[in-house]
Image 1: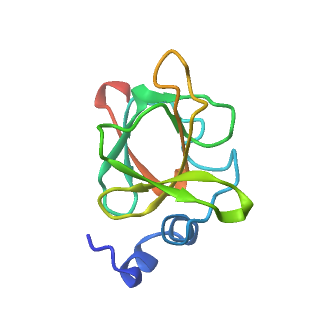
Image 2: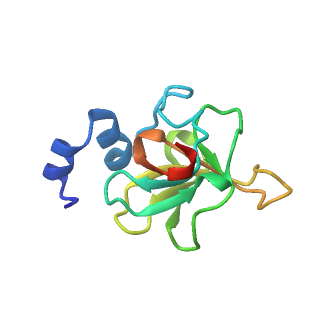
Length: 132
């Protein structure tokens, strides 16, 4: 699997390409995984790197998949984002640098206090066999 722009344009849907390569954001409550609760791992749609586990997913009410932490430290990178007149922290795949979403310090206080707000279009899902 290569991540050259031409290869990605052919392999990804238009929305997946715009989200991961152009830092677009899908509309809330429209993505495949915003209300998806099967056990398993969420992977980068571009490079197939495991990024998040369903055990760390929670309903933030925002319309995007939300996780309180990455699968293991270093799976995602954080970058300062001042687009659209806002000051936020962008989250990208540490392996291929695909845009995933943003992280905010308003997650569950009983865990990490963080909310990784991730576009469904940037993810694929590998479910646990026992949850089928």
